[in-house]
Image (cartoon, rainbow, N blue to C red; front, side):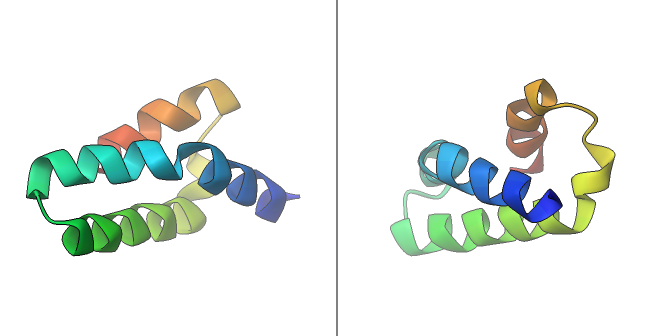
Length: 63
């Protein structure tokens, strides 16, 4: 069940995370590395996110 939520979040928010990371780094490879770290952090900390509505804010905070 948790894996499905993570997969859904990756599908829904990958582009947003990449775009924000790119605005910080101005480098697509660094932005991809940051996105990977953000979603790895999501995998490790999914239990901390109380609701789906908080997911976007939590991901942005990780950047």
